Image 1 (cartoon, rainbow over the protein chains, first blue to last red):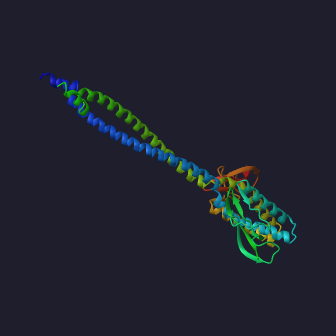
Image 2: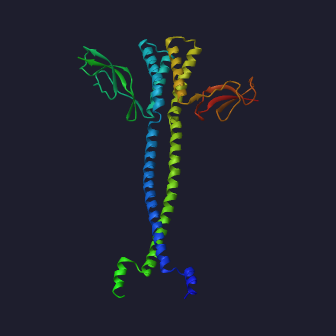
Image 3: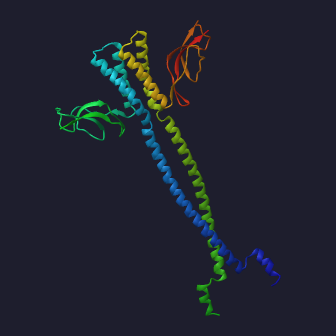
Length: 172
Length: 172
Protein backbone atom coordinates (compact mmCIF):
# COMPACT_ATOMS: atom_id res chain seq x y z
CA UNK A 1 0.00 0.00 0.00
CA UNK A 2 2.75 2.40 0.97
CA UNK A 3 4.42 1.71 -2.36
CA UNK A 4 1.26 2.43 -4.35
CA UNK A 5 0.50 5.88 -2.95
CA UNK A 6 3.11 7.96 -4.83
CA UNK A 7 2.19 6.24 -8.14
CA UNK A 8 -1.55 6.96 -7.50
CA UNK A 9 -0.88 10.61 -6.71
CA UNK A 10 0.61 11.24 -10.14
CA UNK A 11 -1.69 9.13 -12.35
CA UNK A 12 -5.03 9.43 -10.50
CA UNK A 13 -5.92 12.11 -7.93
CA UNK A 14 -7.02 11.04 -4.51
CA UNK A 15 -10.52 12.00 -3.32
CA UNK A 16 -8.95 14.67 -1.07
CA UNK A 17 -7.12 16.25 -4.03
CA UNK A 18 -10.38 16.19 -6.07
CA UNK A 19 -12.20 18.13 -3.35
CA UNK A 20 -9.45 20.75 -3.15
CA UNK A 21 -9.37 21.15 -6.91
CA UNK A 22 -13.16 21.43 -7.03
CA UNK A 23 -12.93 24.44 -4.71
CA UNK A 24 -10.21 25.98 -6.88
CA UNK A 25 -12.02 25.31 -10.18
CA UNK A 26 -15.28 26.66 -8.73
CA UNK A 27 -13.46 29.86 -7.74
CA UNK A 28 -12.00 30.19 -11.25
CA UNK A 29 -15.46 29.59 -12.78
CA UNK A 30 -16.95 32.27 -10.55
CA UNK A 31 -14.23 34.76 -11.54
CA UNK A 32 -14.58 33.89 -15.22
CA UNK A 33 -18.36 34.29 -15.14
CA UNK A 34 -18.09 37.62 -13.32
CA UNK A 35 -15.61 38.86 -15.94
CA UNK A 36 -17.85 37.57 -18.73
CA UNK A 37 -20.87 39.40 -17.35
CA UNK A 38 -18.71 42.53 -17.16
CA UNK A 39 -17.67 42.13 -20.82
CA UNK A 40 -21.28 41.63 -21.89
CA UNK A 41 -22.19 44.96 -20.27
CA UNK A 42 -19.23 46.67 -21.94
CA UNK A 43 -20.20 45.26 -25.32
CA UNK A 44 -23.80 46.47 -24.95
CA UNK A 45 -22.41 49.87 -24.05
CA UNK A 46 -20.16 49.89 -27.12
CA UNK A 47 -23.03 48.86 -29.35
CA UNK A 48 -24.96 51.91 -28.12
CA UNK A 49 -21.92 54.13 -28.73
CA UNK A 50 -21.53 52.75 -32.26
CA UNK A 51 -25.20 53.44 -33.05
CA UNK A 52 -24.91 56.96 -31.65
CA UNK A 53 -21.74 57.68 -33.66
CA UNK A 54 -23.42 56.51 -36.89
CA UNK A 55 -26.50 58.63 -36.11
CA UNK A 56 -24.29 61.65 -35.31
CA UNK A 57 -22.36 61.15 -38.56
CA UNK A 58 -25.62 61.27 -40.51
CA UNK A 59 -26.72 64.50 -38.82
CA UNK A 60 -23.21 65.89 -39.24
CA UNK A 61 -23.36 65.21 -42.97
CA UNK A 62 -26.81 66.79 -43.28
CA UNK A 63 -25.85 69.96 -41.45
CA UNK A 64 -22.09 69.99 -42.03
CA UNK A 65 -22.21 72.88 -44.48
CA UNK A 66 -24.36 74.93 -42.09
CA UNK A 67 -21.45 77.16 -41.04
CA UNK A 68 -20.14 77.96 -44.53
CA UNK A 69 -23.71 78.47 -45.81
CA UNK A 70 -24.50 80.91 -43.02
CA UNK A 71 -21.22 82.76 -43.68
CA UNK A 72 -22.03 83.12 -47.39
CA UNK A 73 -25.39 84.81 -46.70
CA UNK A 74 -24.02 88.36 -46.15
CA UNK A 75 -22.29 88.27 -49.55
CA UNK A 76 -25.54 86.94 -51.05
CA UNK A 77 -27.46 89.79 -49.36
CA UNK A 78 -25.13 92.33 -50.95
CA UNK A 79 -25.58 90.76 -54.35
CA UNK A 80 -29.36 90.87 -53.83
CA UNK A 81 -29.14 94.56 -52.80
CA UNK A 82 -27.00 95.38 -55.88
CA UNK A 83 -29.57 93.65 -58.13
CA UNK A 84 -32.50 95.47 -56.45
CA UNK A 85 -30.71 98.85 -56.63
CA UNK A 86 -29.96 98.35 -60.36
CA UNK A 87 -33.63 97.38 -60.91
CA UNK A 88 -34.85 100.50 -59.08
CA UNK A 89 -32.42 102.66 -61.12
CA UNK A 90 -33.83 101.16 -64.35
CA UNK A 91 -30.38 99.73 -65.21
CA UNK A 92 -30.83 97.10 -67.95
CA UNK A 93 -27.16 96.99 -69.01
CA UNK A 94 -25.23 93.70 -69.41
CA UNK A 95 -23.71 93.97 -65.93
CA UNK A 96 -27.14 94.37 -64.25
CA UNK A 97 -28.57 91.46 -66.24
CA UNK A 98 -25.51 89.28 -65.62
CA UNK A 99 -25.45 89.96 -61.88
CA UNK A 100 -29.19 89.19 -61.53
CA UNK A 101 -28.58 85.86 -63.30
CA UNK A 102 -25.61 85.14 -61.01
CA UNK A 103 -27.74 85.81 -57.91
CA UNK A 104 -30.30 83.25 -59.16
CA UNK A 105 -27.45 80.83 -59.90
CA UNK A 106 -26.20 81.12 -56.30
CA UNK A 107 -29.72 80.52 -54.94
CA UNK A 108 -30.13 77.46 -57.21
CA UNK A 109 -26.80 75.96 -56.13
CA UNK A 110 -27.73 76.43 -52.46
CA UNK A 111 -31.20 74.98 -53.08
CA UNK A 112 -29.62 71.78 -54.44
CA UNK A 113 -27.96 71.43 -51.03
CA UNK A 114 -31.10 72.01 -48.98
CA UNK A 115 -30.97 75.79 -48.52
CA UNK A 116 -34.26 77.56 -49.24
CA UNK A 117 -35.19 81.22 -48.99
CA UNK A 118 -37.99 81.55 -46.43
CA UNK A 119 -41.16 82.60 -48.24
CA UNK A 120 -42.42 85.75 -46.52
CA UNK A 121 -44.63 88.42 -48.08
CA UNK A 122 -46.14 91.63 -46.71
CA UNK A 123 -49.31 90.52 -44.91
CA UNK A 124 -47.88 87.13 -43.82
CA UNK A 125 -48.59 86.43 -40.13
CA UNK A 126 -45.50 87.02 -37.98
CA UNK A 127 -43.91 83.67 -37.02
CA UNK A 128 -41.28 83.95 -34.26
CA UNK A 129 -39.78 80.61 -35.37
CA UNK A 130 -38.85 81.96 -38.79
CA UNK A 131 -39.01 85.75 -38.50
CA UNK A 132 -37.12 88.29 -36.47
CA UNK A 133 -39.01 91.55 -35.87
CA UNK A 134 -36.64 94.53 -35.69
CA UNK A 135 -39.24 97.30 -36.17
CA UNK A 136 -42.89 97.89 -35.28
CA UNK A 137 -45.03 100.03 -37.56
CA UNK A 138 -48.41 101.38 -36.42
CA UNK A 139 -51.21 102.48 -38.74
CA UNK A 140 -50.48 100.19 -41.69
CA UNK A 141 -53.02 98.45 -43.93
CA UNK A 142 -52.10 95.14 -42.22
CA UNK A 143 -53.58 93.65 -39.04
CA UNK A 144 -51.36 93.74 -35.93
CA UNK A 145 -48.64 91.06 -35.78
CA UNK A 146 -48.43 90.64 -39.52
CA UNK A 147 -45.38 91.35 -41.63
CA UNK A 148 -45.34 94.86 -43.16
CA UNK A 149 -42.01 94.59 -44.98
CA UNK A 150 -39.17 92.09 -45.43
CA UNK A 151 -35.91 93.83 -44.55
CA UNK A 152 -33.57 90.87 -45.13
CA UNK A 153 -34.38 87.44 -46.50
CA UNK A 154 -34.09 84.46 -44.18
CA UNK A 155 -33.06 80.91 -45.14
CA UNK A 156 -33.65 77.36 -43.93
CA UNK A 157 -31.28 74.39 -44.25
CA UNK A 158 -33.41 71.22 -44.35
CA UNK A 159 -35.55 71.54 -41.19
CA UNK A 160 -33.38 74.14 -39.48
CA UNK A 161 -33.60 77.92 -39.73
CA UNK A 162 -30.19 79.03 -41.04
CA UNK A 163 -31.09 82.67 -40.49
CA UNK A 164 -34.54 84.13 -39.75
CA UNK A 165 -36.17 86.64 -42.07
CA UNK A 166 -35.71 90.17 -40.69
CA UNK A 167 -39.07 91.93 -40.83
CA UNK A 168 -41.00 95.04 -39.93
CA UNK A 169 -44.20 94.08 -38.05
CA UNK A 170 -47.55 95.89 -37.95
CA UNK A 171 -48.66 97.17 -34.54
CA UNK A 172 -52.01 98.64 -33.32
CA UNK B 1 -22.59 2.95 9.16
CA UNK B 2 -25.70 2.30 6.98
CA UNK B 3 -27.57 5.06 8.90
CA UNK B 4 -24.85 7.63 8.42
CA UNK B 5 -24.63 7.37 4.66
CA UNK B 6 -27.82 9.33 3.69
CA UNK B 7 -26.98 12.12 6.16
CA UNK B 8 -23.43 12.36 4.74
CA UNK B 9 -24.78 12.52 1.15
CA UNK B 10 -26.84 15.63 1.84
CA UNK B 11 -24.48 17.58 4.06
CA UNK B 12 -21.12 16.53 2.67
CA UNK B 13 -20.56 15.11 -0.86
CA UNK B 14 -18.93 11.75 -1.24
CA UNK B 15 -15.56 11.57 -3.01
CA UNK B 16 -17.35 10.09 -6.05
CA UNK B 17 -19.78 13.02 -6.23
CA UNK B 18 -16.83 15.44 -5.89
CA UNK B 19 -15.09 13.84 -8.86
CA UNK B 20 -18.25 14.02 -11.01
CA UNK B 21 -18.87 17.64 -10.08
CA UNK B 22 -15.24 18.49 -10.77
CA UNK B 23 -15.70 17.24 -14.35
CA UNK B 24 -18.89 19.30 -14.71
CA UNK B 25 -17.39 22.47 -13.20
CA UNK B 26 -14.29 22.10 -15.36
CA UNK B 27 -16.52 21.88 -18.45
CA UNK B 28 -18.41 25.01 -17.39
CA UNK B 29 -15.12 26.83 -16.74
CA UNK B 30 -13.85 25.86 -20.17
CA UNK B 31 -17.06 27.09 -21.83
CA UNK B 32 -17.00 30.31 -19.83
CA UNK B 33 -13.37 30.99 -20.68
CA UNK B 34 -13.98 30.31 -24.37
CA UNK B 35 -16.93 32.72 -24.36
CA UNK B 36 -14.86 35.29 -22.48
CA UNK B 37 -12.06 35.08 -25.02
CA UNK B 38 -14.66 35.52 -27.76
CA UNK B 39 -16.05 38.63 -26.04
CA UNK B 40 -12.56 40.05 -25.64
CA UNK B 41 -12.03 39.74 -29.41
CA UNK B 42 -15.41 41.33 -30.11
CA UNK B 43 -14.63 44.19 -27.77
CA UNK B 44 -11.24 44.80 -29.44
CA UNK B 45 -13.05 44.83 -32.78
CA UNK B 46 -15.59 47.33 -31.50
CA UNK B 47 -12.87 49.54 -30.13
CA UNK B 48 -11.30 49.66 -33.62
CA UNK B 49 -14.71 50.44 -35.16
CA UNK B 50 -15.25 53.24 -32.65
CA UNK B 51 -11.85 54.79 -33.44
CA UNK B 52 -12.51 54.55 -37.18
CA UNK B 53 -15.95 56.15 -36.82
CA UNK B 54 -14.48 59.03 -34.82
CA UNK B 55 -11.69 59.48 -37.41
CA UNK B 56 -14.22 59.35 -40.27
CA UNK B 57 -16.39 61.92 -38.49
CA UNK B 58 -13.42 64.29 -38.32
CA UNK B 59 -12.65 63.90 -42.05
CA UNK B 60 -16.36 64.21 -42.81
CA UNK B 61 -16.49 67.48 -40.92
CA UNK B 62 -13.38 68.80 -42.68
CA UNK B 63 -14.63 67.99 -46.18
CA UNK B 64 -18.38 67.96 -45.58
CA UNK B 65 -18.97 71.22 -47.40
CA UNK B 66 -16.93 70.03 -50.42
CA UNK B 67 -20.03 69.38 -52.55
CA UNK B 68 -21.78 72.66 -51.90
CA UNK B 69 -18.51 74.58 -52.30
CA UNK B 70 -17.82 72.94 -55.67
CA UNK B 71 -21.40 73.68 -56.79
CA UNK B 72 -21.04 77.35 -55.87
CA UNK B 73 -17.93 77.81 -58.05
CA UNK B 74 -19.76 78.29 -61.40
CA UNK B 75 -21.81 81.15 -59.91
CA UNK B 76 -18.59 82.58 -58.48
CA UNK B 77 -16.96 82.28 -61.94
CA UNK B 78 -19.79 84.26 -63.49
CA UNK B 79 -19.48 86.94 -60.85
CA UNK B 80 -15.73 87.08 -61.56
CA UNK B 81 -16.39 87.37 -65.32
CA UNK B 82 -18.95 90.16 -64.75
CA UNK B 83 -16.40 92.05 -62.62
CA UNK B 84 -13.63 91.58 -65.21
CA UNK B 85 -15.91 92.62 -68.10
CA UNK B 86 -16.96 95.79 -66.24
CA UNK B 87 -13.29 96.54 -65.50
CA UNK B 88 -12.35 96.12 -69.19
CA UNK B 89 -15.28 98.34 -70.21
CA UNK B 90 -14.02 101.06 -67.83
CA UNK B 91 -17.28 100.82 -65.80
CA UNK B 92 -16.73 102.54 -62.45
CA UNK B 93 -20.42 102.92 -61.55
CA UNK B 94 -21.87 101.87 -58.17
CA UNK B 95 -23.03 98.50 -59.50
CA UNK B 96 -19.54 97.60 -60.83
CA UNK B 97 -17.91 98.69 -57.56
CA UNK B 98 -20.54 96.90 -55.46
CA UNK B 99 -20.28 93.66 -57.40
CA UNK B 100 -16.46 93.65 -57.23
CA UNK B 101 -16.74 94.07 -53.42
CA UNK B 102 -19.28 91.23 -53.26
CA UNK B 103 -16.97 88.91 -55.21
CA UNK B 104 -14.20 89.61 -52.67
CA UNK B 105 -16.71 89.02 -49.85
CA UNK B 106 -17.59 85.59 -51.27
CA UNK B 107 -13.89 84.67 -51.58
CA UNK B 108 -13.26 85.81 -47.98
CA UNK B 109 -16.19 83.76 -46.62
CA UNK B 110 -14.95 80.67 -48.47
CA UNK B 111 -11.37 81.30 -47.27
CA UNK B 112 -12.60 81.23 -43.64
CA UNK B 113 -13.81 77.68 -44.35
CA UNK B 114 -10.59 76.46 -45.97
CA UNK B 115 -11.24 77.29 -49.64
CA UNK B 116 -8.37 79.08 -51.37
CA UNK B 117 -7.99 80.24 -54.96
CA UNK B 118 -5.02 78.40 -56.49
CA UNK B 119 -2.26 80.92 -57.19
CA UNK B 120 -1.35 80.59 -60.85
CA UNK B 121 0.24 83.28 -63.03
CA UNK B 122 1.35 83.33 -66.66
CA UNK B 123 4.83 81.77 -66.62
CA UNK B 124 4.08 79.40 -63.70
CA UNK B 125 5.27 75.86 -64.44
CA UNK B 126 2.39 73.59 -65.40
CA UNK B 127 1.44 71.31 -62.48
CA UNK B 128 -0.90 68.42 -63.42
CA UNK B 129 -1.95 68.10 -59.77
CA UNK B 130 -3.43 71.59 -59.68
CA UNK B 131 -3.84 72.62 -63.33
CA UNK B 132 -5.89 71.31 -66.22
CA UNK B 133 -4.51 72.16 -69.67
CA UNK B 134 -7.28 72.64 -72.21
CA UNK B 135 -5.22 74.41 -74.90
CA UNK B 136 -1.62 74.36 -76.17
CA UNK B 137 -0.09 77.51 -77.58
CA UNK B 138 3.13 77.43 -79.64
CA UNK B 139 5.44 80.39 -80.14
CA UNK B 140 4.80 82.25 -76.88
CA UNK B 141 7.32 84.13 -74.74
CA UNK B 142 7.14 81.28 -72.17
CA UNK B 143 9.16 78.06 -72.08
CA UNK B 144 7.29 74.85 -73.04
CA UNK B 145 5.04 73.39 -70.31
CA UNK B 146 4.54 76.67 -68.59
CA UNK B 147 1.19 78.42 -68.11
CA UNK B 148 0.45 81.03 -70.82
CA UNK B 149 -2.97 82.09 -69.55
CA UNK B 150 -5.42 81.23 -66.76
CA UNK B 151 -8.81 80.49 -68.34
CA UNK B 152 -10.68 79.67 -65.12
CA UNK B 153 -9.49 79.90 -61.54
CA UNK B 154 -9.07 76.70 -59.57
CA UNK B 155 -9.63 76.22 -55.83
CA UNK B 156 -8.39 73.98 -53.02
CA UNK B 157 -10.29 72.89 -49.90
CA UNK B 158 -7.71 72.24 -47.16
CA UNK B 159 -5.30 69.74 -48.81
CA UNK B 160 -7.66 68.70 -51.61
CA UNK B 161 -8.07 70.27 -55.04
CA UNK B 162 -11.73 71.33 -55.21
CA UNK B 163 -11.34 72.21 -58.88
CA UNK B 164 -8.12 72.55 -60.90
CA UNK B 165 -7.14 75.80 -62.58
CA UNK B 166 -8.01 75.66 -66.29
CA UNK B 167 -5.00 76.91 -68.25
CA UNK B 168 -3.50 77.41 -71.69
CA UNK B 169 -0.02 75.84 -71.82
CA UNK B 170 3.00 76.88 -73.90
CA UNK B 171 4.23 74.29 -76.42
CA UNK B 172 7.43 74.18 -78.56
